[in-house]
Image 1 (spheres, one colour):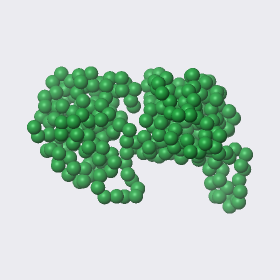
Image 2 (cartoon, rainbow, N blue to C red):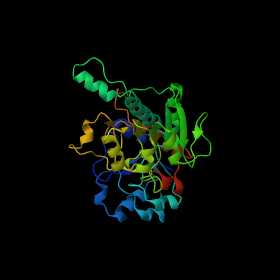
Image 3 (cartoon, rainbow, N blue to C red):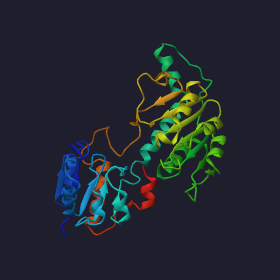
Image 4 (cartoon, rainbow, N blue to C red):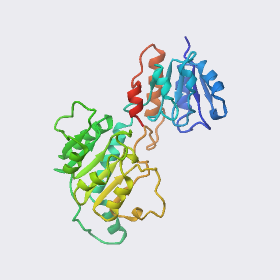
Length: 336
């Protein structure tokens, strides 16, 4: 059977994803229908369009798939998302109905782990003070808070694919590592288990967050947990901003007791007048430092890793195989 492929963008499709090379690679697998401004279609019309294809491609720009597909999928046999987040484009009912749905899986893990390392090193070496001294024409800076990863007590909150990549990146630096993740049965070698998040924060000199955002983790790093970190302690977050009580963290950073490297906030925007923008204790990277599977620099010909993962998944399905990174209800509920 021919593998018809469809993508319904809610508005204009994302040109940075839907490049000629990506389109050609998909058309080599089967006929491709790209429908823009899908939000202008009724749910019934959108469902009818999707039912005539075996594969639907979801992603950041995708229209929410109609819930009715759960009861009547037509020819639809697989939903492949080229992004990590799927809640905005795939209803839970499709997972419950057993329609195979995948996302990019562990694709961004190395890049996000590298971003966490970047922020941790930036804080440990007090790079803001170095930059200020450079801009002021000085030679030298106050090194009283400058440290090293060697021997540093690094607490890792969350040991999924990203957390484990981070641990492996951190290991050669000689840091001491302890982790808290109640859903992980086996820890990497030489990583101690923390009995609780409080225990982790009491022990850590730097807290690095890699947990997913769920009802359980939302606001879990609050004032009480932050208070357990030592003076000049470090908080790094490349996961989701809402895991932290942001007001409590900002208060600690504003008075200079803690330092923070934050790629994510809640919401993911910082007002231009926010005083912490000028602080030597805070680094904000606009949810742009973390690698979302793209390859912006250096520019290269062909498919990006994100596009290649999507093509490989659909090709595996078309050949009769089972794509990797399938969702079940538990994974759907714990993914953000």
